[in-house]
Amino acid sequence: MTDLIRIVYISRATFPISKANDGIEPTVARILSTSRTNNRKNGLVGMLYYGDGCFFQCLEGETSKVQALYKTLLKDPRHKDLKVLASEPIKRLSFPDWSMKYVPVDEHMLKLLEEHGFDTFDPYRFDHHLVERVMQLLQGVPDPTIPVVEARASAPARTVLAMTDPHPDSPPPVPDKTAKLSLVISIVALVISGCALLIALGLV
Ligand SMILES: Cc1cc2nc3c(=O)[nH]c(=O)nc-3n(C[C@H](O)[C@H](O)[C@H](O)COP(=O)(O)O)c2cc1C
Image: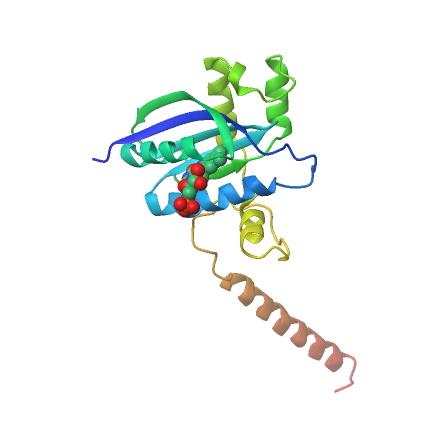
């Protein structure tokens, strides 16, 4: 059986905090794009939160792969002050559908922080209990970035058609045949009704 591990670590972004409130920070979008490609290849999964200039990341997968990635992360100049909050063997993955789930700042996180007396996301001051609460919250929150990140990474001018995708690593959905059939039946019914009306009015 494969030996699986989960690590949770925090770090500080070295790039300036963006004032823009209308989407994902471009550097974070690039990190997500690379992470998703690499993690898919390496069988790693996880989740990344970014708020107030701090990262909070959970990584899961084969121990040797997770440890190798953490060594790479230590050398990445886009963040500093890496601190491991948890490192433990696990029996199964908590984010099996996510090569890297991204969770932006939202009202649930702000409420949780406020309940614990924080006015900013400062994970360096979180106790064990708050780390657990943050993990639970992040597992339940949807990721709104899948099309946004991939659109920005591959074609900056592409229109964003949808904001959510509950299974970003699944193949794209096939067209719904039932919906097409319903449409055809509706059109046929409409034509028959029209003919019946013409006959009833004595026009045919
Ligand atoms: C906060 C943060 C989180 C990252 N998470 C991942 C990750 O989950 N997987 C990954 O492959 N790279 C991640 N990276 C990027 C790596 O540090 C590194 O740049 C990347 O793995 C190099 O990939 P490449 O050799 O394909 O360019 C992250 C970087 C930062 C700053």
